[in-house]
Image (cartoon, rainbow, N blue to C red):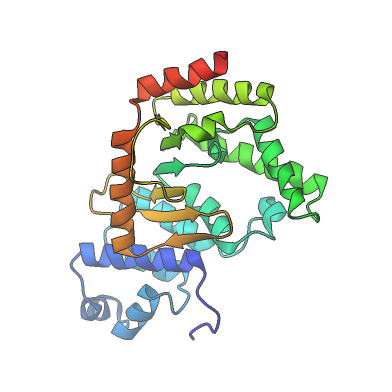
Length: 286
């Protein structure tokens, strides 16, 4: 039965991934009908996120599509996340898209991020994160000290997957303004710069800085590109827009291509990773 409410973002992402795998396997709805006994309309409803799909049905499709073990694990994990994890209770007032972002971030093989406002959460110090989160009380006076500490804890735990044994890949490009904007105090900023330097030295982390003096035509908003299977050159990334007022996932293929190209252009205008690391290190010493 089709749900009356709009499909959750996770279901839309899962639908897109299943459609991609079917097309990559060169299978049609009639092929699925012959092999699984399903009607083509069922496949259409699944791939358009009009109905929920059971974990058992997902496993049948992944078998048929010859999905890699890693991709199978990630998609099944995404399918299981039908409710907000209890550990994220501090974010129950957040948008559905941001909660989904944390779900996808946790299973993505690689992440690319362009940031114009603040240091990305996965590279923040505890003091920097606490000041940012506490500052939200100016617009949300209902935010309690307990919720603040829970959100800080969640942010710190999100960082663990970029260290061994997981060592997920992340490529961050920061506008220089992010590094010059004081958050909290000079002491907090100095500690944050040192952490960025240490983080950038990990073999799975790439950090670049776009100097303010660098001429560029792309300004735009902060965004994150997430790839569930880095080894698949044909896979389209998932695009997450982190706006000042609203956040959203963009799942359209053309939009994915646009943001991929935008990220490439930003990387080309940024300082090289080694130069960027020294740039940040100089800020930490100043």
